[in-house]
Image 1 (cartoon, rainbow, N blue to C red):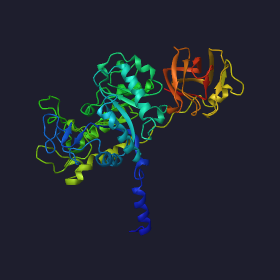
Image 2: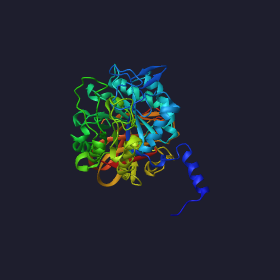
Image 3: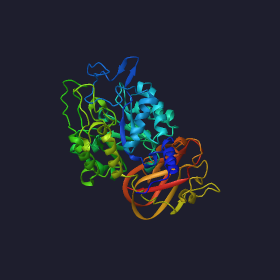
Image 4: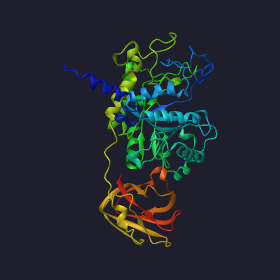
Length: 472
């Protein structure tokens, strides 16, 4: 057997110890892990670990016992740093951070978790929980708050495949019946409803399921996936390794879903990735990294817990003892690799096509809007609204998504735009979002893409550095 030189081995070891160097490049941004930062352990005072009337540290409200013991979610250099190493090991590139409102305990820990995630090349999306008083309008305000407060972090997740927009999962979205307010952020954020009921997502940008039990049979997944594909929405079904909340919620009648030595987790992933069952997901969301109360964790559980009251991962994928503790991390890496990287990007149907405008300012012709260069731009005749720019796509094609861009260095502005004679709407071009706006349109066959500009808070003219069109 060939041996590498001592010097080369030392170089490999050094590279592996550099921040973010070990696995970051291989992480799957299509695999999202639900992450819970609500645990506390400070001065003998415990948060969440005592759920169900338990008395930590040996007695906790969970059916498995963490390898780290009942840790503190604010221990950024200890527990949280270890979490990020484990998440790297899992191959997942995104965590979905459980967030309970502005000023909440979890909000106060977000910056520290983002910093730890950044060191490992992990991105952070957001799980907007049903805090007291949550409304559609407050959710819009929360999205603005989270983007403004944390958007400059290198760990703040934006999906390059969907207009570079951040992602916000809304847990128990069906508690609210009117989500019209989400139209204000439709172009700048991907907001996912927790449902497979396609009649409940009129104002959302996607759908997910969360339920770790439902993944075993995948009810409604194929239809939900097909609906999302036809309407330019993100489909992110949820899979989990099992479910047991007996210790955390004594007397609860929620059924237990046995792990079956890993077979349950495999079955749910297979359901998600089977086109005939899972509906071709954009992302797969995993319930969960560390929701210990529900026993759905892939975070390592102690193979020798404090008492026989706890389960272990022994037997998972043929492992035993200490090796079983990380079995679900390693299996997640396998499935994340099966899911793969970003799906092949559909071509920009407007690139290089013939384009005309009702007017243009000298030096900024309409051809600049389809040249593939975000720094050059079309500008309409000033002080003469309405103005239109029309792209001839060459033949009738089904367009489901339009992406509009301005030069990335420009300041924020809102332009009022109608697409192909539809209702005009205000779209915010924000430099924090690379001045890119995504507009989802009803998928109809058309040869011409016509944009009508009737307002611009930044300049008295219609402006676009790129007009991009993508098939449904």
